[in-house]
Image 1 (cartoon, rainbow, N blue to C red):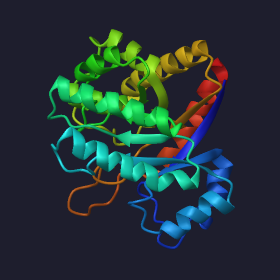
Image 2: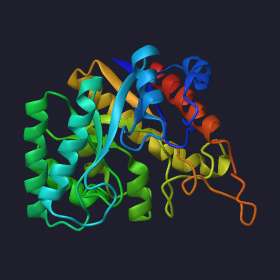
Image 3: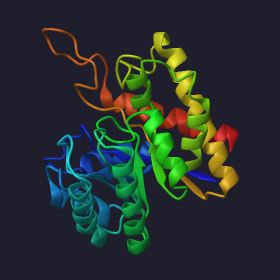
Length: 276
């Protein structure tokens, strides 16, 4: 099994294009970019990055954008429209913020059943992120849908669950195992009990949180290998403020975001290679 590193464009200033980032990205080993076409500040530059610079693409799509609530039909129509806008640019799969945390189980079943039909019709995988605001924003509602739909794919970002549950999920072993069995894509960010992103994963005070997340990621890789997955993908998805911690008054960032992302990418690539 191979690991592909994915560079997200969240917090990357693309207003003047992306060519000046490429030497560093290639040195780290990124082969894919993850970004929203709709939210791109410079769509022509993003498309050049895909067509001329040889990077593959994972589009981010957001059902009903970031507006809380909404009907199943509103979320389906929004998701389908965004996906169809991207298909001509040959995405390798979609990462979807999907559904609503306000829904009943019956609404979620209607939605995810319909999205699986859409996925089969289009022939491109749709991985649903375990993200706050969404139906998969906590372990327990996620479990109900995964048990109902064995074919459903996840983007596993357990940092959100740690934040929502206010613990390192010591009582969620079976749910983590189930999510790992459905994992199509991995967001390697370290969360803590009061937030989805630690100040700096390199700092010794976060060693326990880093170890917990890495144990989950290793579990995912082990299961993917058992399933015969040829290529696993990982995005070191540390983000800008307010995810990135800032000093009061000055609003200076406590760490360099690009350095954190690259450190995590290299660390997990080496971790993966040592095990697989």
